[in-house]
Amino acid sequence: MKSIIPALLFVAAGSAAAQQPAPDGTLIRAGIDTMAVFVINDTDTTRTGTVIDEISIVNSKWGRVLRRVYRSRDRVMGVRVDTLIDNSTTLAPVSIRSRPTGSYEFIDFVAGRATGWLLLANGDSVAVDAPIPGTVFSASSFDLVLRASPLSETWKVEVPSFLPSTRTVVMLTARVVAAEMVDGAPAWRIQADFAGTPVTFWVDRDSRRLVKQLMQIRPDLAILHMRTQLPPSTPRRIT
Picture 1 (cartoon, helix red, strand yellow):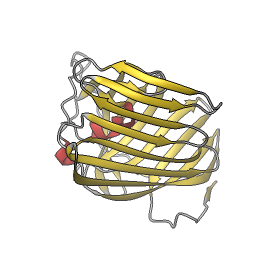
Picture 2 (cartoon, rainbow, N blue to C red):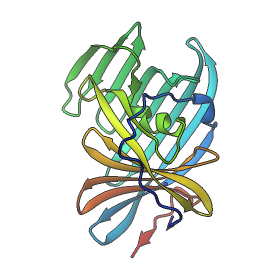
Picture 3 (cartoon, one colour):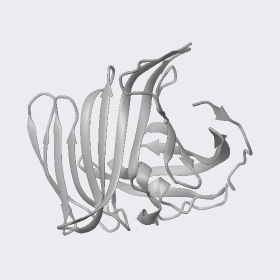
């Protein structure tokens, strides 16, 4: 998810209330993005892997859906393949098929419930049968909800999201904190709290593509994703 050229910074009005999520899934374009993955350890930054993020809009037994296939191969985070299906317009969750290294998530969203099962890394199998009250999104599609939202200088949101690992609905929060230029194109910088983990997203203002993402694991350790045209097999080290 490239160096950033600072542009106009601003402070969102403190009195502005968080909005209810109202994503327009039609803003998300089909296509394939390749992201380089870097681990930032204090002052050392090393490329560790690649993410291939493929989005398509398809007709299915659930109607017209947005299908996202997310393939990650990383020396630190391991190998995973996620297939995420959401309603193409509302981004309401339909199904999750996630295969991180050594585990598995198989979840369907039907009639106000999330049902399925998890295979944990220790080999245990856990059933999933949780109520989904009202409007809830998949935590796995959190960035899509942000990218499909009516972003502006004062925009902030609270997104009720189903988190498979805890089998509960949690509130994920986000707000636009700056307008910047990334690789010569205007982007929104969005600061989010993902269940206690600070995550920053840079979203292209025109295409709504995710151009950069920074996940702060601890003060001296972060994981950076950057959109890149480098071949997946090409390692790179930044000093």
